Length: 422
Image 1 (tube, rainbow, N blue to C red):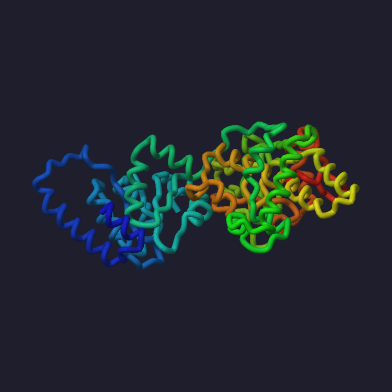
Image 2: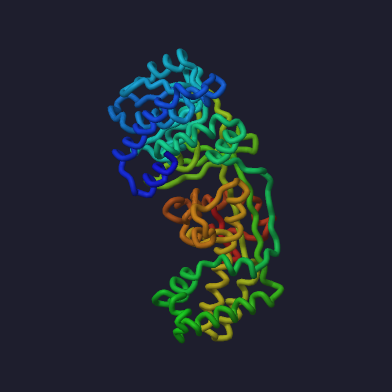
């Protein structure tokens, strides 16, 4: 069945063929069972399975039952259109280790597995899990459901699963990074953003560079000269300040708490169709207190007084070279702190701190494409339009005292080669 699951995930088999394979395995196991020594100690666990009220589809549920029962689990199948009270009664009667779909009011905290085409991992984490006090995990198909069940029944693996579902910050201290290596930051600058969007190259820059197209070669050489100049100057350096905070959501507000997760520090507004609940656990107003928090990181980075080079170059009348100085300078600010379309070592460090990884094997490429779990917002953009919220971030991080970046009357950052985000 592992091979069947692999072929199904690769779209080499359809559901009907998976069902046929599962039925064949069921008959094979039934034939062999009389000849196998079986004890209660060999039982991996007891699982309560049901299709929830309002859903008449049972093909997937029955497939899950076959696969689980063939792999050492005792499965109690309650059928389709099962109401919450029936599930609660089934739990109390059978005392399963895992439930397969309101339990909190009944004092039930058994792990819940949900799955099927109507759900997603995101919906499970942000819409289902907050309504339940125990572990809720999503399985896209029957074979991964078996793997999840095995994980939950292993105490050590269950802890690791909980950490993956809701990573916690390793510490809630203020971190200040000074004189970060510019040479390392250069490697995190998205070339598409630098050469095409900011320096105006038309076409696929790296393809043209490999083909030794004269304009691409010349542009690359100009940028390299600027990078070398920036590395040679002592007045250019990258600094950053960041801190993790407990947070929850309330409507379109993202609420930030003291390190103990109790007292509210600040709240930030998410605009339009954005609901803060899409990104963080909701508050528990009017319900029993929950111990679980989400976490966010706030940060500000800067390339410091080196932005004065731009003014010096401009004053000398070297306008053609101005963009080549300004763009790498601003991209360093972005490359270090995390402008949305590009990668940066600071962002990577945030993700590693809470155990998050990008989705693919090529970390840098996936970061350039924003192919990772999580979101990052800067004030003044459509998702977070209130530019005045910069003051809140600067206060929470003590930005000016930490790295010398100041806010103007219009909430712009000075030096301009600075970026802040949540």
